[in-house]
Image 1 (cartoon, rainbow, N blue to C red):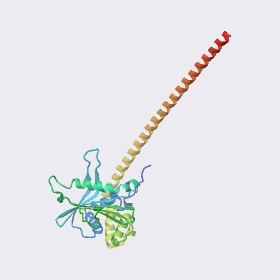
Image 2 (image 1 turned 90 degrees about the vertical axis):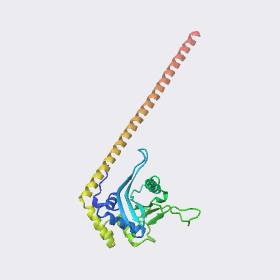
Image 3 (image 1 turned 180 degrees about the vertical axis):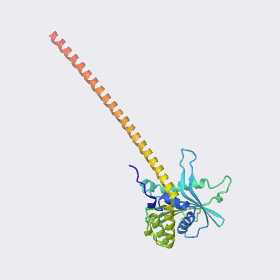
Image 4 (image 1 turned 180 degrees about the horizontal axis):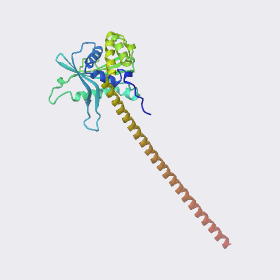
Length: 290
């Protein structure tokens, strides 16, 4: 069955397409990204560069690559911090369980291209990774999970490897979080006028509305959906073909097994007939002897 295509107007900011389009929009990308980072980091953001769907290819076709939905670079105080922001709606148990390892993989890909040959490790840029989900990604009901490397034996020991990971749950308990972040996350999940609860969100909603009614955006969305549908159809056809092949193979195996059983039965019947004939022959010889 073909997947029903949602209208562009029905998408929310937690949807990958609309989120990526907003982040990389020539007019609205920077204010949207700056607002998001300000709410998450609780500080003003420095000079910002935005890169659309930043690809990290595998070392060859046998190794996994990654495409970051939103890759940002901030220059502040002589240091550069890189940001990876990813919305994720898939609620399959295996995908949720693998989210920490997915973040680890993305981190490795980003670090792998973070230093030029001969550069000191101290030149490695700080990294902030943000995963936004409309479900609880780690199972403790929180709206925000902030993850950094620590020393188990000395929990309070400073250990700064420059990496911070945020998991933001739009439906989590808001204890300790600002009202503005709560409103923003709610709007990300349901990007409608009903969830516009502040002037900042009102401005953001106007931007989202313009993007949703942009003809070029609509064309890109249609093409993306058609490509995804083509891939789904191809996968379905390959699955059906594979199933038919397995069915044929199983049928052939069953037929071969049935033929073998029949041949064994025929052979036993033939042997029994020969034994009966020999027995009759012996009886005749015995009768003649008497």
